Image 1 (cartoon, helix red, strand yellow):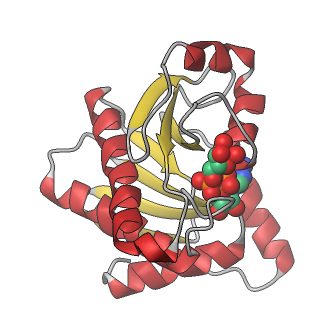
Image 2: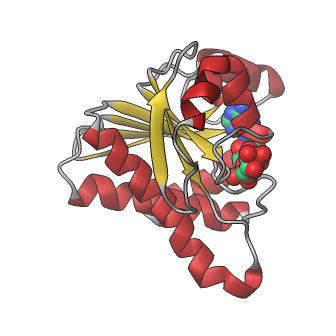
Length: 201
Ligand code: AR6
């Protein structure tokens, strides 16, 4: 199902209510594209686009730490960081989400495109595996690496959607709802293209 707002007022309404712009079903699992601030989403876990220190930063990482409160940083300090492509889980503290899954995307460089695409896919795979290990039913991903880490948004959206689709198709996942959370409508267009290319929706 595709619902595409026609004017700015509609976009505001969609953001306020977190109505998905786009949904697809695979094996009774629901994939959604939402335009929202990820810290406001009511899901079991939100994924954080962190850096390898796991000690906070700007962008979505900063927003998650601000919304979760200082207890999140205190728990992150005990994790001894996280290598690129891997993921670690903490509680969500003051967030609606019960958990935060922290993953570290690659810093894009065109000279290492293949390696960086594989590392970005690993972020999604490892985050989904952690969600399953904790028997979570819903999770939301930001567009990992597409901010200060400069990963091209079109490519990142395709990797995100293809990796989630593979997980849902190949694994006995307990996840019933997986949200691709975009910060603006421009990035949502790339998820729309990725859904269309993979014949989802
Ligand atoms: N909700 C949803 N998406 C968001 C939000 C939000 N509140 N804020 C930003 N985005 P970035 P990266 C989108 O830079 O590229 C941090 O300093 C944003 O529009 O947050 O993986 C970390 O500590 C973009 O599409 O993460 C690392 O050092 C996407 O989230 C570094 O940045 C990712 O942008 C990680 O860089």
